[in-house]
Length: 162
Image 1 (cartoon, helix red, strand yellow):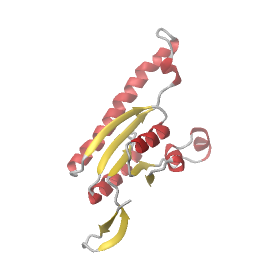
Image 2 (tube, helix red, strand yellow):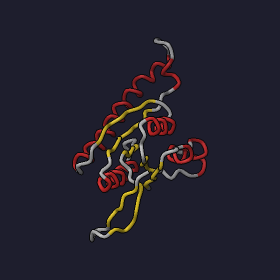
Image 3 (cartoon, rainbow, N blue to C red):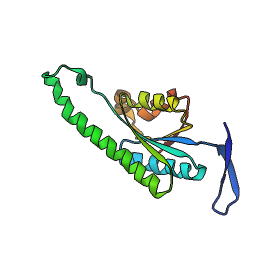
Image 4 (cartoon, rainbow, N blue to C red):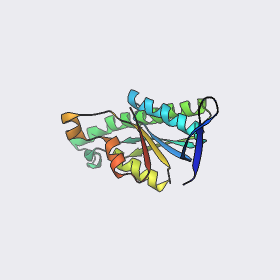
């Protein structure tokens, strides 16, 4: 891995960082994700990296039910989630464009943590940037945290923004 020097506002070198050239910014369109988006774009701009704006739409088990099944009602909310995912990555793209950062948008389907990790590895991403909801207690126990799962299982560096 190559390294790059970041500079402070006065132009002096203040630290050495990995030379990230491909940064995946995971978003779900939430306010919390927006904080991570801004952090990721800032890093990308400083390092001259390309951003990959990624949103993962979870696939509900009923999506594979036969046509005519009562469970086919899932199609409507799934399409709404797909539309929201497209809007979320386009917001990242707009933010990147206004900062002169190269960006590619990606909408995936599946388990969010698994898809983020898989995409990062398959596309030789250098850094994953994502927000953390800071779930605690019963909610975290029952639902888990996508950010936590990515941190635990990714072979790629991960930056969590709060």
